Image (tube, rainbow, N blue to C red; front, side, top):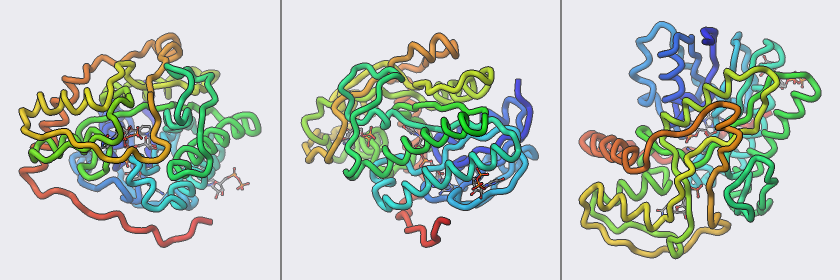
Length: 329
Ligand code: NAD
Ligand code: UDP
Ligand code: UDP
């Protein structure tokens, strides 16, 4: 088991905070770097007392000089509402952030893992999506800042491998949900649970027959750590997600049932370039990592519902995003 010093960028975000927690539980020293764009200090509040945990406010678009053995690069807004709020900044974070973290990995000879995404497949014409599929992406649409930024980051990872022999790992993460998702991030799970808890209308975009496959965060984090611990010749990309595929309408109905809500389903326009279907082919994850998710959607949703209920009892974090005014180099 790796006990070295680990950098987690985006560590104060939803997935990052769970990853920091798991790494600490395994005995690692963790340096969490975040500019709090979409993440919050509160997500890692419970880790601050741990002497092996350090929190640093920093924007990965700028160089970072620290000494670490491994790097998980998660810094990037992830929900469509968040990443489209300041799309230029989103691309800068993916591309400049990747260059800086790869430069850091090169200098200190650290292993580096990129949190890539199923969005690199775009609106897929191959179903389920294997890693060998090159994708179907609009390069100039409203989702492109995220999709193309993440694709360029993958390119950079593989070029740093070919050119500088870096030890890289690329995970393609499919829709992940769990406690510490931001209640106002506009993602489907957080929107539907918040709407159901308030007995408000549940907003189905389009006909609700588009599908997604939802992975519980604990399963995902286990997959990320397994990938990081593979031998040097394993680079990925490797899909990580849950193969259980549901229509958005089914998701809404399940959430209404689990919350006992009186919400009604209402239709709203489908956002441009919204992928019709998405399901991971987990062949590589099974054979290379010996990994598969174990949390059923209903069980994971019950935990998220409890989390959002507890938030409602407190004050809701409704902070609007602020434009990042600094310029990336
Ligand atoms: P999140 O928004 O909760 O976390 C992202 C974190 O990155 C936040 O804490 C944010 O403040 C930080 N950040 C953003 N820009 C930064 C910058 N320039 N410098 C430093 N920190 C910055 O989102 P998440 O769902 O936890 O996603 C984490 C990673 O996983 C992202 O890279 C995302 O693209 C990837 N991912 C997530 C999903 C998912 O379903 N949640 C799916 C595929 C990929
Ligand atoms: N970098 C960094 N931390 C380091 C080493 C490099 O942030 O410890 C940044 C550096 O500022 C550079 C980027 O990573 O912009 C890429 O570094 P690399 O050495 O690959 O390229 P070069 O410095 O030759 O442009
Ligand atoms: N969606 C929806 N209602 C909402 C939020 C999202 O019907 O209130 C749909 C959205 O159009 C998409 C799916 O749910 O088809 C997943 O959306 P999300 O933003 O969570 O993630 P992504 O599109 O990036 O997979």
